[in-house]
Image (cartoon, rainbow, N blue to C red):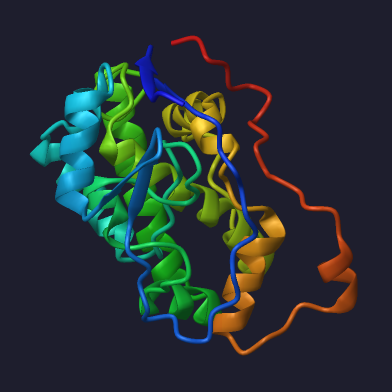
Length: 239
């Protein structure tokens, strides 16, 4: 199947898999892209392949120091999860976003979930507020414009984990008055590339439990997978 880029979306068939239980959370699987039977390895080669062979693919790899700085601090609070934009792959994105994959947990997020202290929560809220303000200032659908780029592919999965794990472990919810951030998430939820490869809520929670030495009970293991994609009722896609 050919990869195509149109109106901010890479269209693809995605085969989703449940996140694997890993005992060594420092091991990073290498990124692999398969396009029409051609396997492309290594971050730089994957990036060049998309820029050269995917119509509009160059839009993914924009350079924006302001946005890069804006979301960098948030990453120190989270662990990386990326989503697929190519056939027969899942949870993998070329370029910078694929340098780290699911199952690798950063200590700060683990400590946040364990400590649940006001300082950490306020720091997270501060980062989210800055992103919200940036989106309000630009008035665009995505971080750098109305076309999705690599920064969006890095940020949105982390926001998803804030929603799911934050609510489960510490009753944290993204404030509804972060209107621009919620509208941004709404636009991302409308992309097949994200929704078709987004881990189930149970998988996200289980990964955190494993990090804390906890286990899923039998009831949780048998639950039908659920996916949190709801948006506050007062939020619309209109600017």
